[in-house]
Amino acid sequence: MDVQTICGYAHNYKHGVETIIGMSKVLRYSRILVLFSYIISIFFLPRLNTFFGESVHRNLRIEDLFFPIMFLVTVFSIHRRTLNYALGPIIYICYGLLITLFGLLLYSMPPKVLLIWGKEFQYLIGFILFIECMRSNPRLLLYFERMLIAAGLAGLVFLLSRMTDLHRIGGGYGFAHFTEPLSSAHTAWMYFNLFFLFSAIAGVGDVGARTKFIIKICVPFLAAGALLSGTRTSFIVLALFISTYVWKTLQPVKIGLWFMMMAGIVLFAIFRDDIVSYLYSIHADIFAAPLHRVKALFIYLEGKQLDSFMLSRGDSWVEMLSLAFDRYAFIFGGGRGFSHIDAYGVVPSLGLGGDNQYTVNIAEIGIIGSALFFLAIGSVYSFVHRSLRCLYFPYVFVYLIAGMSLEIFQLSRSGQLFWLVAAYFIVRSEGIKERKAEQALACVPAQGDVRSRCPERV
Image (cartoon, rainbow, N blue to C red; front, top):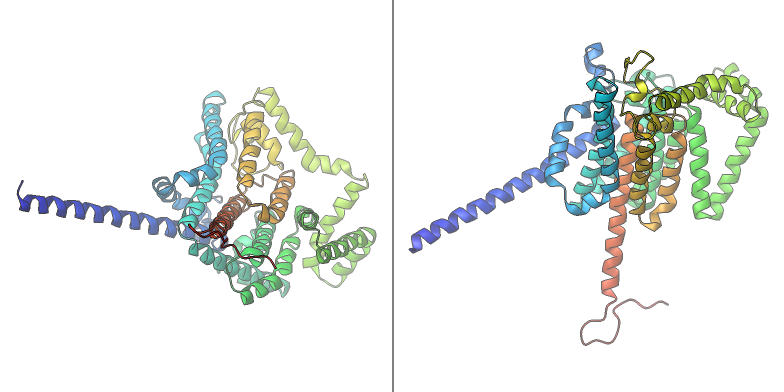
């Protein structure tokens, strides 16, 4: 073989390597672009029918359009370590697909019920892609936090505009999801997640000290946004979150604030009628309306008007469980969309109306799928570093409690944000573990040196 031939082979080899490197760069930048497009769509962009009217299904969102691309870049870029983090959720989502496919055959459900499963699958892909991108480039975490800050400030602007009756600022600026007319739950969970993420960034974020100071000022206002959404669940969730967090940390200042919160709850319970009447009398409806709904919680606690509660929630729970038992679907499930089948075997809509995540799960994925659902959440929790669990545990806990009032893990905004938050805490935990590993290596004595390089305690 002459020299010229060898040089030709070397040139072709070099060209092939350069091509592979170029393709890997394109894939890396493509997945970052897709991930941040997904995040922007969640926090800033409304439903598709905002732009195209009733010609588009009301449940379709912009992130649904580029989800196939999102799925492909995730599949081609995922690493084994990232896959380990997502193993529990992957088992759960695969079981859901299997049972749904069986449901299409056994119960003659229309193929459109796959869209319900598809939304959960989208949340999982977003979870995996977030971990994959942020692990490979930790600097992206700072950009994500800055985007969250922008979303939180946008939410505060919208809240202020509502309080000053300048509500027309919504929609056209992409803030419609803060007060979507279809459900106040979108408002509540968007503000609650922003409240939680601002709290997390203030504690463990990469932003500067001045930015953290501004964030801490915004935190109580974002909590107020969740309360003013008009959902009773948001009041319960915030009280439980703060109480659980205080119990996990046991810091004197936080305990004092907790007692002030409890005193406020007790005072409202005693004087609730007078407080709500006064707020209505001064036309402060933005405060009076949600408090008027909260009054019902204290009435239920007193054992009054329980019949109205059963009519609004209890009957739907019993009906859904009865449907699952009658059709022998409570063990393995009837598939996603099974709970939407009416008495005539028709699926009238794909909206969420079960009012309970767990009764819906038993009907649709059965007891086995429900166990895998909790396994998925628990497996992700196990990867969160202990130093972060004092903040992450209350978040997961209140989500599980809120599942008693709505399908919170399937609802678009709350479900998407839950898995994004989980991915954020996993990436943060990995960073903490790496720093501790580096510190441990720094403490190992150098070869031939009997003294430790670890700094001495004073």
